[in-house]
Image 1 (cartoon, rainbow over the protein chains, first blue to last red):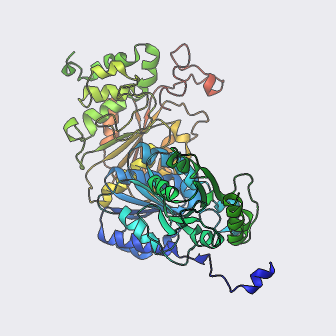
Image 2: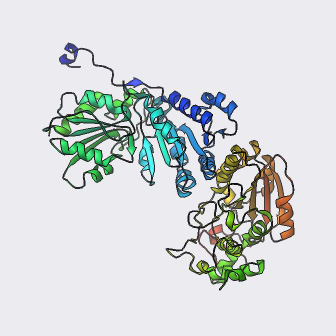
Image 3: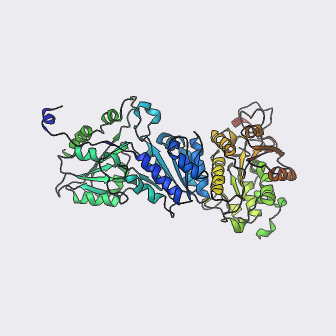
Length: 320
Length: 258
């Protein structure tokens, strides 16, 4: 650490624990109690959080055991009869293991479901690569029509999940829960939110997705940039980004995403297709499989997603 | 030609001929013909004017390969018109070589990739049960080689454990599974708690009985045995064998009861 770090007051935390899984369970339990269309499909994971709901709604809380292909197939069948299925397990088993079922049993049948993944990129790093899914959002990008929510605070979960369970909803939604996030909930459901506006001569725009916001704010505290928060990444708020860039001094965009680096690069390119611009995407590295266990914070550092790593990348990108 | 002139079982070969135009493909699709006919003619409570009725019976063609027999039966029963059969597989035809539920009235699922129908059928049965709709049947048709896909075995286990007594799986068995099913297919279902029956897949009365006799509190599996797709003595790998009764392999991955 440098001497300046010793002389400055302690920085506020940029990563705080979030019990998004409990927020999810509470929201779905309430929907099960009030809407007979709601059904929950589980593959053992988190089943303990729904024992009371299962006792009240044995025909709508469906634990199929450790069978992820069937989990999605069952959701497709439920939706074909008019139900609104919620499907939940660890992200790698939910999205990667059963990906053809997601493609065919939901999208190709033209039916909807709400998929809720936990674990994300490396939230249980002691379990290693098998329980990591940094490519989940990129996989949904290979299919048309998915909404992808990446909340950064547990209080945002019901605001994103509740409407997805509404009576008129039959669309396809992926909700990516995290065990870590920001100190405060931010507005969600309305696209890009400007959290800290730069000047008219600013050096560009930072787009921080979900749990990355507080780190991105701290990492760019000394830079004249606009920092925006984004909890719904698909559909991407292209108009919002275009407006934020138009108000900035330079058309330079730094994406900070908690999953595979550059996942939203094509969206930034599409949003700014009518103007010359620069962009860089921070996220989980693509080049190597990180064969480490330890803590999520250690993986943050490896991928340059801790505050110091983001700060270094931001200086490099904006102060060219 | 008026549709009404093609409503009988005896008309099905002519309807298939409108699509295939040659005997090879007709042979490939025909393993399912009798089962499909018995289902739509005698078993299923579904008519063209009730394709959106929530209490209709559901038929899910999991084995989406070789759908000519399926389309022929749908045409004979008035779900689709006859003239489009001639144009199947064309870009703007609703009738592809694998069916798409969004393009064809009365088709419950799009299929083609093997191993998806039974899981969707389990979910359909669960959805109907959750809504208190205990009358509709959910019938899904698979091929014996399709059972190779592990996804089916997730569904077979769960369907019985959850007591899905309105669910029926029909497995058209033309012995095309490369590594076979020692002990028989019915045994696989019976072991998991299904009512399992085997019937001659050409015998309409036998199929009707197998499909309609009571099977309280458990799902029903009907194995419909049809002639082997490949000569039993052919020692070559499956993709190099010739279908029985044909000079060469018909469709690349398509054909009979995959």
